[in-house]
Length: 166
Image (tube, rainbow, N blue to C red; front, side):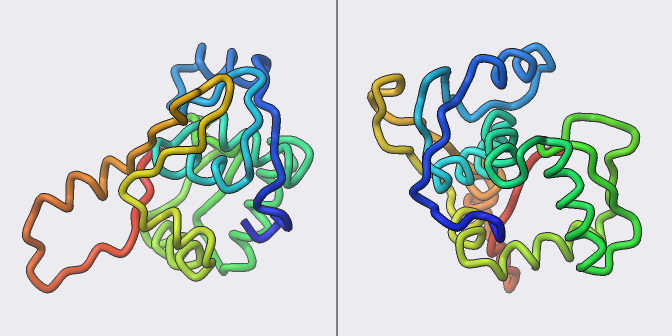
């Protein structure tokens, strides 16, 4: 989010992004080939349903490639003082060199919540993207964790935001 200057800028989704992720059984937001998706909608797609096509699109827009984006993620991890975290891709698909710890993840979540765009998305239970030719009703997205936890009494605990996934 720190590298996005224009949240209304759009990215045209491609089949070359979607196909390998589909074959890898990655979670998808539901954006399709030829669909023009704004940076805001890509962020919702990356966070709420853990859409790998959205994370890859964001990586391409912000860094030029997923590999370059992983390098930015690792730089940010160092900046945050993380000692047990290393990223190799934007989606979190399994790779033995892609890892973190619970304490490092808590620091990452706090840093994300400190960013206004990320906070808005991370605290949303559901969201529907604007209609497009490819998705005339928009893409309906839900944060399953926030949806499920909203059904329970938490006492004094407060859940501000959440991100599911790997």
